[in-house]
Image (cartoon, rainbow, N blue to C red; front, top):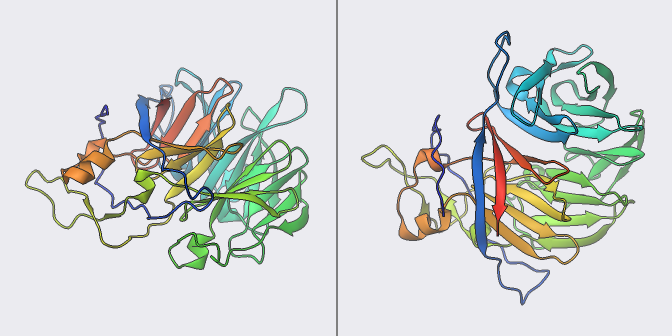
Length: 357
């Protein structure tokens, strides 16, 4: 396993993973852990840029012209060329047209012809804000909830973790249509934190045929819903890394670097599983906040984990993990060519990711 030493080393976070057993293929062995290469992707700002830094990036999406990055801490979106140059920024703090307040996620949405728009979930204002590719505001839609969202050809869906249903459907003009999907009572055996709100916080991925993939932020559970919100299929995520349970380190070592050690009980932290991304080969890629990526083939149910640090060996040997080896890549975008770019809200950086089988 290759290591990637990064500057701006963060304090080592207490990261968690739960212990679960897959129930969709009881005789299947857990998948092996492969390698994910992580290469820093430095953003190049123009000399006259007023704020040449990224603060708490929370989303990234590919477009024909490169990438759009949600720079949440600066209340803006960055348009980035494939070479890393920041072509323009748009958005600012506020509640007016084109302004953002606590933005949470973004999507690049195809429009008529070869055009596209950039949609941002403006959680602080309880709305969805739409920008053109030039950064000019197109429209904004007030919503019943402001969770994860995805877009179909004729509607968009917004997760509603505190509502009576799983998600709300709107037409493309922002008019509420209906609520869909059952809320969870945790009767399926998938272990969670015991907090219904955290366990039911989900990410949504719309498929071309109208189906919706639901992933849970704190549970290793993936569900495929039909267009009417009924559960069509589900999988439990399983891998040696997901099965690993960690506790926060108790004391720093002499070198000032804290150690990770196995635990007798779970520690639960929100947002363990990041937003999913569909790969060109049809697999669902889920970022694990604990230094790995997990893929699920929606056609066959095959699973694979890719780690970008040797977490398993380190824990088994009870040796220390350097803080500069730790990342938290849980928002990932994929281009049409298959290039993966992830944002790290812990280090305020972007990286290119290569999955190595």
